Image (cartoon, rainbow, N blue to C red; front, side, top):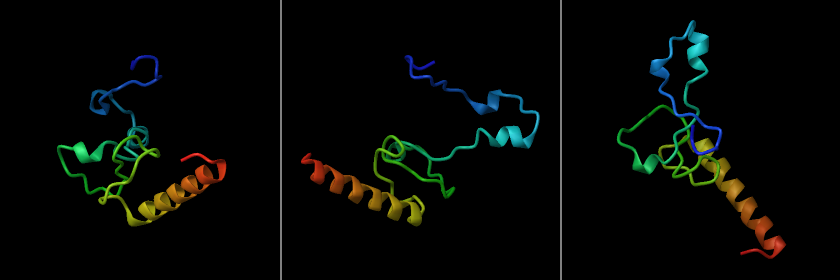
Length: 86
């Protein structure tokens, strides 16, 4: 366990899955801290510079996701300005 964060770090290769469907539940949905990677992963998944959803997407990420994230960031900045936060 990870210091009360309700997270377990586990290698899926250690689990004996009964079916492909069960194994697919452990498939990655994104890659975090990708600039610090040891291996390139050209798998079409989003690649984040830090924590997913709270950092920037790397150039290796799918273009449509990068555009969406840029729009989200602009909206977040707009909301901050409206609230007087900068």
